[in-house]
Length: 118
Image 1: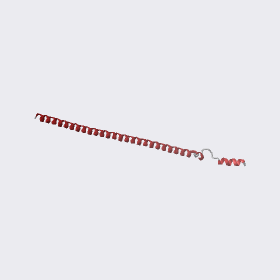
Image 2: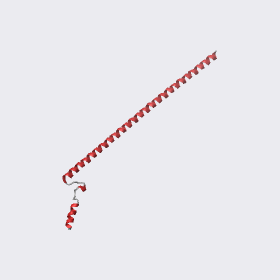
Image 3: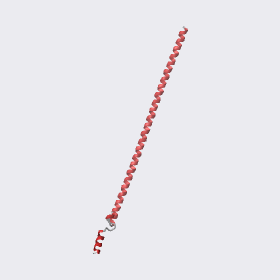
């Protein structure tokens, strides 16, 4: 009776290299493992490619940001140039008005001298 129970238990106990270990017996198991490994490798390669693409996209975005910053700097430079020109024109106008006042005073002085001579 004990021998019958042992033989029955041995049949129930899975042998090594069967599905409970995630492997099938023999050639088919190795083929499936090979296909799975290749699939995992392809998936890793695709993931690396996606990561490289994301990195290239981030680099392009940084380049666009640098270009926008350079454009803003150029605009600020142009604005400062316009401010400077405007300031120079105002100062030039001020000098001209100052010269005009000076000539006016000179005319007044001459006129007074003329009047004093008479």
